[in-house]
Length: 268
Image 1 (cartoon, rainbow, N blue to C red):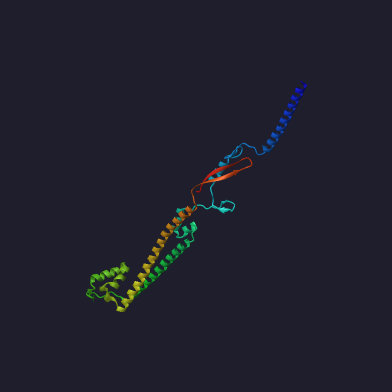
Image 2: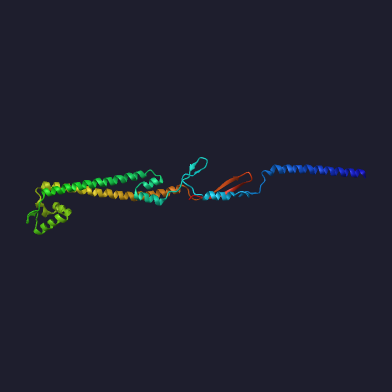
């Protein structure tokens, strides 16, 4: 009997020692993981901090400025160029819309504009000067013919004289045109040589004035072409930024948990 009691006491003592050792080991393990154990979700992070998805959403909603820096290299984010502004700028000043987008060919449109307006101005000034010259020349070498004068079967009548007198007072352009081309006005010239000189001077003036108008038309066309070109460049520039919806997977780590989050982003 005493033998069985001793064996039982030995088993009880061994069990106590085993439980004590296991308890110490579990307590030690609990102490080792206590610093890193926290209630967390792999997607939204620890419950006692702001969810990572909300932080990502806030980052997406924040406006991006032209000077905002991103990434380790510190590169500037590019923003869209307004096609409407580019069109309006070049419509007012050719080339300015292209320069707004960043295209150096805007200087070409600016140069064409300057040349067109300068050419139109100088051509018109030269034409007006030539016009004054041939009018002064006609006043010195042409006079109203005598009634009944004839040239190649065309007679200078009293009625035609009255008409020419009216043009001289009220319509100078018509007057100087008729004395150079109407047959009944030819007897009024003092010589055929002077008539030919007058016609050459008048043709030269008309050529200068006509090309002045062409230069002005070129300036107008330059406005239209530059405006359309700036609009197209702005649209192409915005398309090159790759705007659209993007899905990115990011590894989220913190001292309490680790997880993967999915961020949907779009450039505006």
